[in-house]
Length: 364
Image 1 (spheres, rainbow, N blue to C red):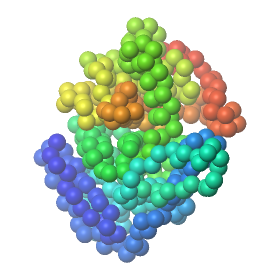
Image 2 (cartoon, one colour; image 1 turned 90 degrees about the vertical axis):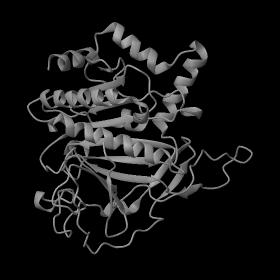
Image 3 (cartoon, helix red, strand yellow; image 1 turned 30 degrees about the vertical axis):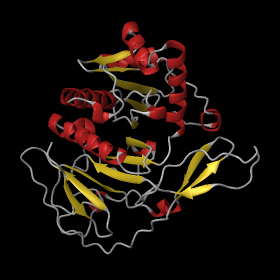
Image 4 (cartoon, rainbow, N blue to C red; image 1 turned 90 degrees about the horizontal axis):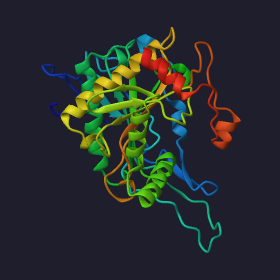
């Protein structure tokens, strides 16, 4: 992959155009009268009851909400006056989110200690970090599963590029690439796209998994994620697909009605540690899984895709790159709502067995 073309939007946000071999990005000046950005638009507040940071980003209330297709801000904007992508066409483009949850350089944050064990103050920090949008394709009605193989690989290469860049920025503790697809999930822009967050702290789920991995290593001398992968491959009943470099399976204790985890067969902490062959295979298997999702019912499946990435040192060293694919659709006509047990107590109740879901996805 050649280096992306760097561009600047009207309000100073950075934009990067990734092109397929033989193509050349040709953006035009962004002529929109955008307001200047507020570098202190969000903050972190510490919840002492859970020991977790909460992002307060009130400016996101004004973000674009379900525009008509002819006013989509992610479609190409050839005149530079209508779109977040001022170009007649593009392959893959990444840009800073206009309505970010986190923005601006700073330092990473840690759990603040209590003085003498008592609550002495309310603790808040600037909402430093980075939020980016990645547009998978200029096709407004497409999806990741519809991308040609070379185009899907370009998206994965863009993920790797942004992971490497953000991990090297001061104050970024964790890089999270993800996609929300479908109005049922809460998507407000129908155009196929994902997001990339650079958090200034370890997210709660990541921190919890790393605690389990550390305890497993101390007790057994091996990596928790590698051992789970080996066990799922040996059992086989929940394996959905295998390739030379990757294995996809429904986890033994799946929480979501449709849930698939995708692991590289060789341990890597993040996308930057993968070989070109592994990256090629990842794009193929990932796209295949999403196409199975789209065929499980008569209509495309709403889903969330989460790329779990880690640094190769410190508390994150026990991590193992993997993708979690999840859907809230529990049947062709019913959704799984995260009601009191899940939302208030984080106690998930599954309506289907992981083995049944795996069997159905295998058959597809």
